[in-house]
Image (tube, rainbow, N blue to C red):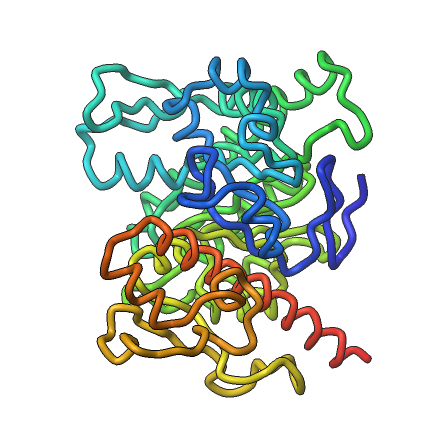
Length: 371
């Protein structure tokens, strides 16, 4: 395995930076299949340990041959540990569980069964799933959380990372995983908006030793703006030869900004969720000078708008997705109004193709500027 500045080589393929990965949280990108994803250029998927251990369940995943075979996806899969999901569930409502030194104890809404996710269990599950990159369990916080909460989260994240690394090394040795058979392991940098805590966490994780790192915590401020200064500072703490995953960042403009700040890997549910709810992404310009990413290069189409009823053109002339190659904007509007499942598939593929076209344009722009 090698880790180059512009790519990451994994068992199931190479990630070319920047890479956008849709969230296949439960082992599926809603409404589309593996063939659809390949057709629009998706290189890798993110799946979630916190959710997968509940549905379909780890024993079921193993019975079905692991995540790749179960989902018929032969390209890389990164599995997030579930720290953010625990934050969303427990920090918002303590009745659903607790976090302590052991790990995360949680009671899913509508369930009578409690789960315990420890740093060791997280590693065991991810390696058992056959994932390409495993991510350590971390204690996620919001940037506006008080300093005392940030301090606790950082110390807990470091302690959990040490335990996760020990378990990872033990399992790798037991299973005789070497070379390309060995998954990579990433640690997650917490600290909220406290720069000294970000530094403390990054330095501790570097000392433990990981193949790559993730930017942890909620990445937006109270107005929904990307935390550029904190992202830039956090990236500066990690030597350039390491890949850094901008966890949960996937708004098109934020992918461009994140790449310029030194991040190579991005994931988010936003593009597919926006598609299902009627917001489609388009470029305002053709690829060309500066990758067509100068000025206000992003435009939204809201498919519910009545002016689209008789629109006989594709959603976007520069898009080659299955929607734009075969169907009109007016037909898509009709499908949306009919609440037909074909709308969900076509719109999802369109927004995902936009994201892969975006990363292509960013790479081209970077190449042109260097050339």
